[in-house]
Length: 387
Image 1 (cartoon, rainbow, N blue to C red):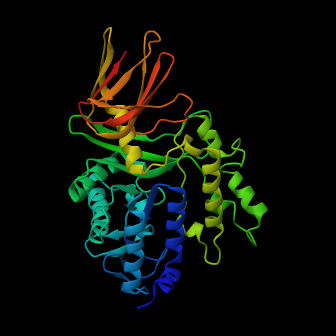
Image 2 (cartoon, rainbow, N blue to C red; image 1 turned 135 degrees about the vertical axis):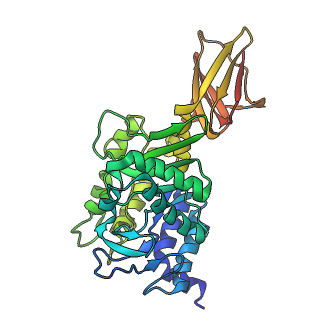
Image 3 (tube, rainbow, N blue to C red; image 1 turned 120 degrees about the vertical axis):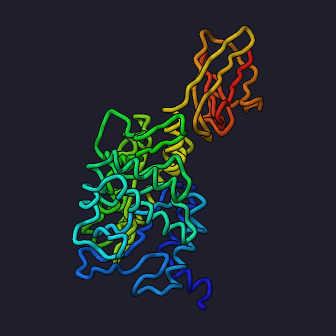
């Protein structure tokens, strides 16, 4: 067996990325392609599937890659199947490739067929010890039948993972201006506590498009490419615009575009970008996984509340089909009254100074007649603000 250093060199790509994740405390998602194949392969047989083995890759090496993801990334990243092949569609019975691309094929399938197709990807990841709580759409997978796709996704998640609130990645809005680029709740059933949320990327893939044609990664090249996302002063770049619009800031990259065949240009840009996000935004932003963001967005669209105000307190009773960590809301009082104590489900919350840039978990602050409260919402939660 190779020593730890030798093994780390073999798996350098995964370990370098995990190091970056840990250094900056970032969260996000990574996709696995369950069946590997070459683009427009004349061979109808795929190279293999990640739970059984891949041609040209030793079983031990494959397991090592999966282990790095399970141990170093799963705690802070969601893992999703990028449907099944990301190339040609797959016949589920024969496990052979069809002549049509997966994204073209998907756009004329019915809900039942899509459910089985998605479920296969979830099952394969589950076999290697990964519970995939969402789905990544390769190219335009099922875009033209998105309503069917959404219902199929939920059915597959409930069948394989017993997950009633799921998310998917399909859409990009890299140029939309003067408007937030936020998640979209595509399906919601309050009675059954089920939801499907579309997570929308607001950025173009500058890691790749800005580094094409580079002969070397000079400081000037790196700075210019990163500027497309966020300048060092925080005044320009796509992320600066999204931040100013109070939007969710979602960006993405294909892994092979971070690590080219002979370079690491995309990775170098990512490293500089994370440094700038840390320096410019600081605690003004909070990293979230897609599943956490989907849960938050579904909750704010689904909850209902009742407000009661007396001479001694304001009470808010919540009715939500979903639990939601760090749920944040505002109470506007009829007049400015000094609040002495706020509790959530009889548990006192910490008061945060108005000068602090953001709330923390289970805390509150007051700005004139406005109360800003962050707490872990449960079905039937009650907030009580005492005068």
